[in-house]
Image (cartoon, rainbow, N blue to C red):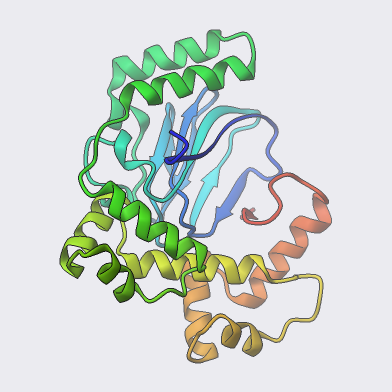
Amino acid sequence: MDGLIGDLYYLEGAPPYSRLLLPAAPAPLLIVNLGAPFLIRAGTDREAMEFADGCAVATPTRAWEFGYPTPTRSVGVHFRPWGLAPFLPGPAAELCDRPATVEQIWGRPAVAELRHRLTSADAPHEMLMLLEEELLRRVREIDGLDIVRHMSSAIAETRGTVPISELGVAARASSTYVAKRFKEIIGVTPKRLARSYRFTATVLAIDVVAPIEWGDVAAGAGYFDQAHFVHEFREFTGLTPTRYVEVRQRFLREHPDHELDGWPLPAD
């Protein structure tokens, strides 16, 4: 399980904002909701959809919006890029920018039983142990997982700058096979995953309280020109670079030292 999961978490209380904008990042997610339904507006959707029992989200390619109830209560899993696939009934690509309910992937009776056990637990630690047990029970073998994990790890270590062709040659696998396995296990191609890592590393390194020279930021991240960088910025965050800085500064101003600081953005 250590090779599939980043962390398990428990969330309870009042969110900093009722709606958060989540930039696209190489981080699949599973949430088991224990409170009132939450809302998700993903990909190019115009309207948010309600999720009562929770959701599973593969690696997104666009920013998505998460609407929290107040108060909120849930347990969840942050997966490594390849980590969600062994718990899904189908290809991860089906969940890119199109979250599924937990019921859709595990079935209504199983989810109802899991939620009952979670809400009956005495403490958050026990809840996380129950969730881990459920994952251990459901994990399945996935063809090509080792190759995808090895190549994805190399992409992550280099923040998306490693040549994908070199990784394929080292893995002794054809580009067609690699692309197919990536789509089924991660949901996106190796090149798309590398773009996500490169962009995430670039944006998280920006100091929003200091003067920013966007041309230097774009060049340092390896973009051919600033226009390409701005286009990518809007695709991954839903915001222009200037607007992103304004929103990040608002978060820092209104919620200094908040544990969510760094990536989620207020959408209110």
